[in-house]
Amino acid sequence: MELGSVFLILAVLIIVGVYLYAPFMSRTRHLSTDEMHEISALKAERDRIINSLQELDFDFKLGKIPAEDYPEQRAEMLKKGSDILRQLDELEPLISSSRDAQSRIERAAAAKRADSADVESDLNDEDVENMIAARRKQHKGKSAGFCPSCGKPILTIDNFCPSCGKSLK
Picture 1 (cartoon, rainbow, N blue to C red):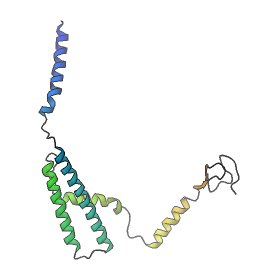
Picture 2: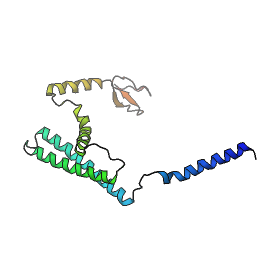
Picture 3: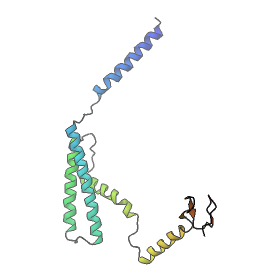
Picture 4: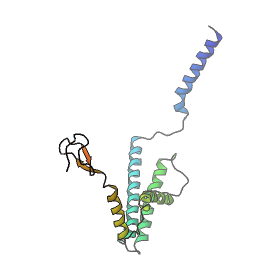
């Protein structure tokens, strides 16, 4: 054998050995099925708390919740959420971070509220009516339905079907 082929075989054996030994070198902990179910249940509970917190904020803004009850209810939900996050951190030590649990809950609730924050809530009826009229004006030249003869889509401005030529008036 030549010296080059010996080195090639040695290199391939070293690569195969490193590939086979890699799982033993990693320090990741494999979770059991029970732990995975518990993590899943905790994440579902976390999402439920976040949604409840979002609904509580929304109801408070609408005036459905008295101002004296709101801080107490919000603090209770934040406490529940932070307890759940602590449990998740104990089960997932690799995913945990240095952030405070309550601030994480606040950020998650704020992220879920982000889409509603984009819409201005101080529009009066006249502004809404103007927006509806503008939207209707945009759709005037759009589809008016389908041709009664061939079933192809037609526009409101069409006098004849563009597909079969049947009169639409």
